[in-house]
Amino acid sequence: MYGTAMAPEHHAAVEKITGKRPFLLTRSTFPGAGRFTAHWTGDNGVNWENLYMSIAGIINTNMWGMPMVGADICGFADMAFKEGGSPDVIPESSLRELCNRWASLGAFYPFSRNHYAYFTRSHEYYQWPDVAAAAKKAYSLRYQLLSYIYSGFFLAHVKGGTVARPLLFTDPSDVDARNATAQWMMGEALLVSPVVTEATTTIKPHFTAGAWYNAWDNTRMTLSKGQAVELEVPLGDIAVHYRGGAVIPTQPYAKVTRDIRLAPVTLLVTLPAEPAGKSEAAGPLAPYAHEEVCAAAIEENEGQLVSCGLLYMDRGDDIQVSADNTVQVWYTAVSSADGRSGTLSSTIKAHAGDAAGKLRIAAVHILGVPAAEGTAVPAASINGRPLAAAFDETAGVLKISGIELLVGEPLDITWTLGSFSG
Image (cartoon, rainbow, N blue to C red; front, side, top):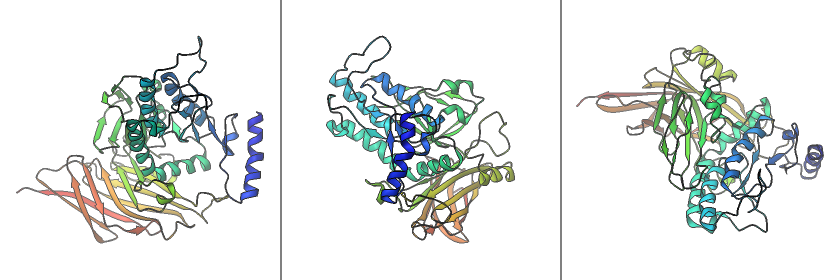
């Protein structure tokens, strides 16, 4: 309670001194502190058990109102108390593998930080080339998804809810999803399934019913019911999947967030497995189904494939955010039941602040488009203007480029994938 009582006082003081939105981090917390401060889960151990336990830590903390949370990546101390006494200090070879896996996992904590005690062996990523490579791969994807993650924080801020959440939230009727304790969802559309045990390269994560897309190659997996799926995850990799039914903003990777923030946006449209109106209320919930724009699109387009998502942007340090200093644009894709034609439109809720007039949509990638017989003939246009379109038949991705439209301008894209035999 003391830490929670400190949070609003420190928040007010930093706000007054700097004139900017504070970023505070605390260990001592209680429900309600999330309005003022981020949280880290405390002095964890340098061992596999604590890597696995960190997943429950970030999910639990999100569910009691603190979405910005993370654990010390690679562990804080070589020795940490647990039931039955202290674990043995793991050997150097195991430490290297542990940090490799933890770097990949920790890149998708809401709050991501490598941190350790002065009396603990050094475990910065650069200590080992393979660990540095694993971290670079995972963080490059995180940085490409920063606008998606930031938009999720905005929704949690204004409406409550979580950023990191258990998989069961996507389908409360899936009993087995309740036991998916080595995975978590980041927002509505990103599933993270790490390796959490030593000397392991094969895992069987659970997936709820629907369409899921490998984030590394965009290939699709469609499941009629929730089930475990065996995946090969070599050291240095991590399983990450996009959920069908979403529109996900992405931007080119850069080393610092400043260089990403106003970079051109590529929208990923992940086609769902089922047309709108077919899911039972107790079954899988469509991404963003409780949001006004998305709920209307789902209701109005029964029998069509509906995908939805938000792009939110602000300056990053404004004390108050509103329609007067932010960008808030919802994107809705409505596709034919066979997935070979559709539209993508925008609903502009706000277009102000320093991103207005700078942030633009450069491309759209539609994931899950089935190949037609014969030679594919993709076509697309925006507001009546023809666009360049190409089809990756192996991945099932229709790539539309040359859009170059400011996010504050109405967007209306139509696309088709025809074919001819020759």
